[in-house]
Length: 330
Image (cartoon, rainbow, N blue to C red; front, side, top):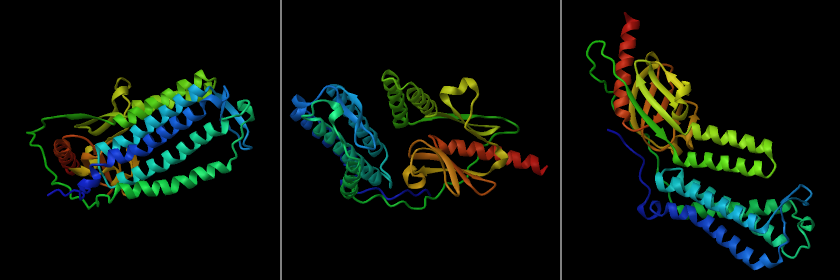
């Protein structure tokens, strides 16, 4: 029988998406209130970036600064809220704590920048001492603790039993194949956001930085949709958008598979986050929590993939692994 982590208490788990977005909404409201209260006294352009000596070395228009800050807070609110909505797990309360800490530090620096510019004859006269960064970090710590407290108890992860190692009954040398596509909308959104930052950097004159961000974002988008295939060659993971170039992340031959099973995989509890993850005794491509394929390799390590219909994939892979062992034994 399969077992799963104890579910989070309904009173807290149901509220996790709301709790995760509240600090960013609060920072957004604070930004708007401070901006409205000082907008008449802001220089144009205003100072938005400061060097180690506290002197202003970056400037933008007040409206541009407000729009950019609101956009960042909105995107971060969605980015921290989506995981809490999609997959309650042992790591979600700590994700919420990180969101509170991020919102507190960022909100403080945004409001401080606006207040520091208020009444200045021009942006170049504004100073922001670096010790204010320490204040921002100091605010982040209790804010994170508050977020963790509001999130409540996390579900207690238990050792999850893997299902039996099934086989597909393929007569003789009959061949069969299985394939599914997995993707991660939050990671796609992050890749698009990075691409957007690259475009903004290029328009602002930072061409090298912009190009690097564009390339990073494009790669991120390309690898957040992966085709998982099981056939006579074993398990193959290939980026969907790059399939025309025959690029693959990994291929595990049938003779390397000691056993394939399926079970629910908790991304945050078992791997600490999404993506291609490596741990001391296991690794895997995990783009969400849920049904997953678990391979026990001949070397003793485990490889995991979160994918729908994992039981069918496990059964087919076991069949091919048995055939490979039979050939080697013969």
